[in-house]
Image 1 (cartoon, rainbow, N blue to C red):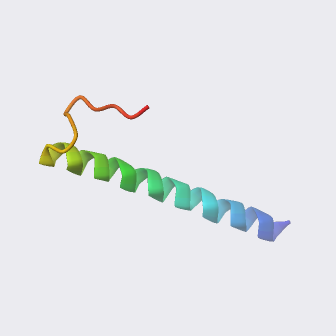
Image 2 (cartoon, rainbow, N blue to C red):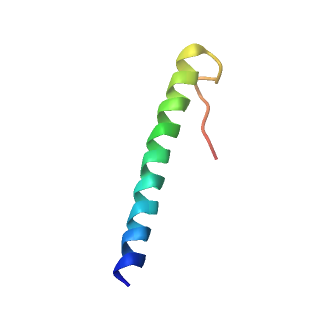
Amino acid sequence: MEGLAAAAFCFGLMGVVAFVRLEKLIKTLKEKGILDQDYKDE
């Protein structure tokens, strides 16, 4: 069971990292004018 908990922790951590990178990408695209400034993901 410890292995399952460790795997779940790793996948959860990767999810958080992916979310942060996505937010940074959206911010960069807004700055470059590719996305509208009022863009809001659904």
